[in-house]
Each structure stands twice: as C-alpha cells, then as structure tokens.
Image (cartoon, rainbow, N blue to C red; front, side, top):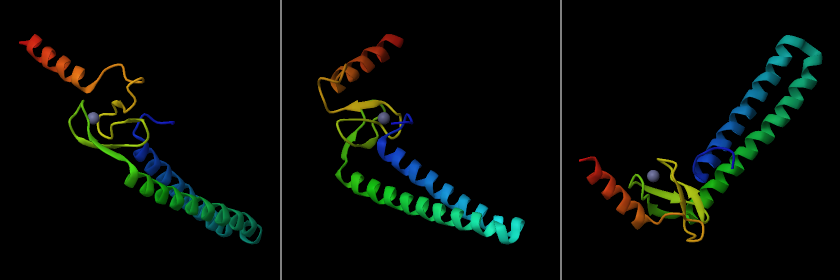
Amino acid sequence: MFFKSSKINEFRLWGLLLTMLGMGLMVLGTAGIVFFGQSGKIVAGIGLVIGLIAMLGSLAIYFWAGMLSTSAVQLECPECHKLTKMLGKTDRCMFCKTILTLDPAQADITADQLEQQQISGMSGNH
Ligand SMILES: [Zn+2]
C-alpha cells in the first residue's frame, strides 16, 4: 500500500482522488471548447470520456471499500483504545496508524505485553 494509513481509509482516499481527477478532466475538456473552439472539441471529447471512466472507477472503489468494510474485523486498538476496523491479517489503526496484526508470527509484541509496558512506563515516570 502507498500511504501509511489503514486500508479502508486508503480506499476512500483513492476513490476521492479518482473523483477529483475525473471532474478535473471534464472541466478541462469543457474549457478546451471555450479556448480552442472547433479543434478543442476533440480534446473535450477525450477529456470527458477519460473523466467519466475515472468517475466510474472511483464509484467502483467506493463500492468495493463498502463491501470490504462490512467484512472487516472490528477491534479495540491496543495503542489508543479506540474502536477500529482492520482488513486482512495486518492493517493499521484508523486513528493512531499503529500496525495491527492478527497473525501471531508477524507480531513482535502482544496486546498484553503492550499494556504491561504502558503500565510499567507510567509507573516509571513517577
Ligand atoms: Zn490506534
């Protein structure tokens, strides 16, 4: 994945980016007619078609993200104690971006160990 965020948030981000791209291309295409007249119509046509495809793509991504989020595992983040959702075996917390995993082989620390660390860390400060 490209960004340091949870997968669901990333799907939403890509959906948004594609929508913006699609709208941008449509606006540019329409502007092409205004600025270049007759010859701009070809550019406008291409812009509109690509823009429409991008918009449809973003719709598909939104739909897919919606489907995925219904199958996502809901759990309390051990780091910030907020209710987050994760996709697959490894994902990031939606709020604090901590990497969470359900696979014990991938984890270098368990939730219990983390809690122990936080408790000992707190008592160490005083
Ligand atoms: Zn968190």
